[in-house]
Length: 395
Ligand code: TRP
Image (cartoon, rainbow, N blue to C red):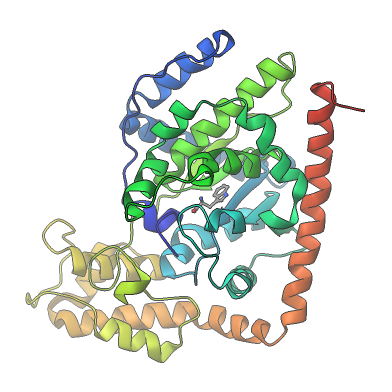
């Protein structure tokens, strides 16, 4: 996946936003609030972490009896295969929340693919690959709605009223938009890249989701979504809560690097994909960068590549990286790599086998998406009907 994916992109820390300038008198209160929230990205992050812990506890307490209270939406861009970073930081967590009874929506954000590139790429195969990984990981299509942007017209139409609620200045300040622009090789800023946080707000708000599991890089989008919900309610709905403000549920999985100790990237060949075979994984980890110190210790500052391997093994084994390091001890890089390889391959064996089985049944995979799209359309049409009604457009 490319740079906007939650895991890949988490390297880019949210930058403090500049002061907001109120564009409309009735936005002043929102702008002041936004300014306070965005003034210090670190404080925002700390607050989001604290709130996520509370949300986790509330979900444990109430999800089984009151599933819609925590309706959750999250998604991926279909730009390529999912890797172990996606699995550890988001896929596993989605399944965990689904299994607790949280009503779940997963958007395959196909229109978001063309925010920062000139061609759509292998769209069909990438979308199918995502569905395969979702199902193999345990996403249950009878409980979770998996859908694509492009198949849900009413969701996309929400973007029109939402665009009226944002200014170009605030979109230009969005740290993720800025980062994307910086990474796009001097390509000029397209209208879609500038406004995709508004489109993402439509993803989140069309189904009135309350919880959005995201990486740190996506927090500015969630703040933008909350501002859009507040402004819609104030300006167009006489203060009625047509759109409740969603909350971020931050992953506590640390940023994972590629097997060479640098940012994961398909072109660097340092990624372990979920669909890779056990042998491909063996080869990838055998080639992983380590260092020449024999004794294995967990020291992310001084030994980032070794620490990254320990972190990966620890996450798969549900063990701390320090205890993996203790176990390897004087075994050196070779023993470390054996532990990591075994952890990855044994943990993913079931996933990979299920994925291969499902891949032999493309008709089933297509039906999962068809049914998810149908359900998303029902929900989006209901929401759009409410939006038209409150805006006096119920002709
Ligand atoms: N931008 C997200 C990413 O690149 C994907 C995404 C699209 C998303 N719509 C969403 C995530 C809505 C959360 C909620 O990872």
